[in-house]
Image (cartoon, rainbow, N blue to C red; front, side):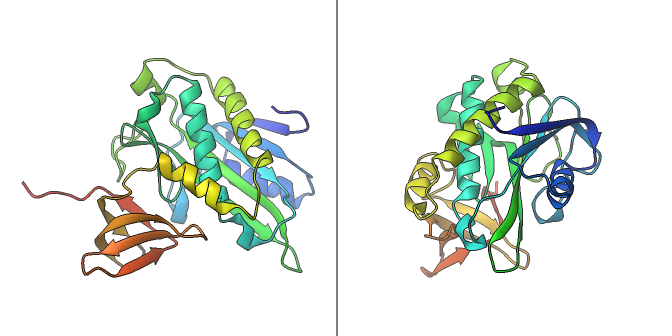
Length: 249
């Protein structure tokens, strides 16, 4: 781990994000990583379960930035780029590793990693802590996921250990967070956009209450996805999922 960054490793835990939150509430100053060999109650975004077989990376970084909740807009994209950096370091083809809004990483248009960011604010509006949960498919991947999945092993034929992946991920993420300028979202958005999946194309968008197709245009200054509907109107999404458009035979 980078200098000054702590780490806890558990053979099995319920959820690395949950364990990191427990440590934060108990007063651990951070930054620190929680890494698990296996999760019994892994979580993805919007309350979904996260398949957690031994051999993949399940890790959460807890840290205490002195910023406001609204300053976090760039963080999901920073994390996605750091995960992309990590896959590239282990031989994934550069042109095949893409970022899918809001915070998934694809290899060959199949999901290889997901991110879950959680935070808690103090009285007065400043953040108390932030937890970045990251799952990377090193060896295994579900064959029944809503969005097709893959693993680093499947793509490269090389098996990477959890320890090596955690070490490289920690270094890549530390470097990007260290360089993060909270008032400069645009530079992060521009880099993320270069490696994004689906921009300029028609995609199926699913929110909690509707499903529709639209052309993905890019990111707003606060991290929303800007999409152009079939009638020409533009819409901003702050939560949801993006899928390929299913074509009729």
